[in-house]
Amino acid sequence: MDDTDAILEELFAVIEDRKETLPDDSYTASLFTHEKGENAVLEKLGEEATELLLAAKDDDREEIAHEAADIVYHMLVLLSMKDMDLEELRAELRDRR
Image (cartoon, rainbow, N blue to C red; front, side, top):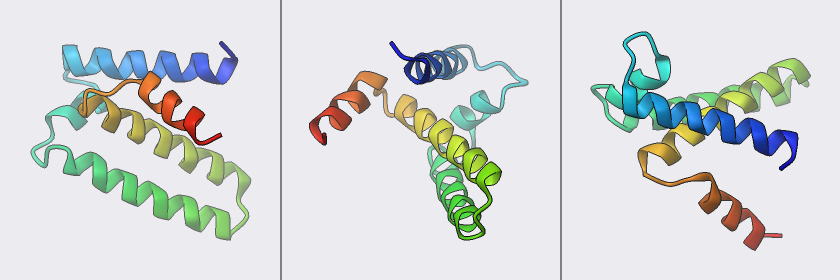
């Protein structure tokens, strides 16, 4: 497992834990319990995608990395909400090689 894969595994494990334990002080947990339901995550994905596009337009490498990480994080939350796992994502990516 390479470093990127290990980081994604660790992050997804934290997301899954927050989904189960729902700590009061957790942003991740708040996404699972938001009154808008999954729409809260979908809206965040749209917002982060727009911010990524603007950062790319401005050639702001630091902001591009930041916004891309936000997209990956919120995408992983969405996968967890849909009871999917990283292997399903990996399989789809492998099929596209």
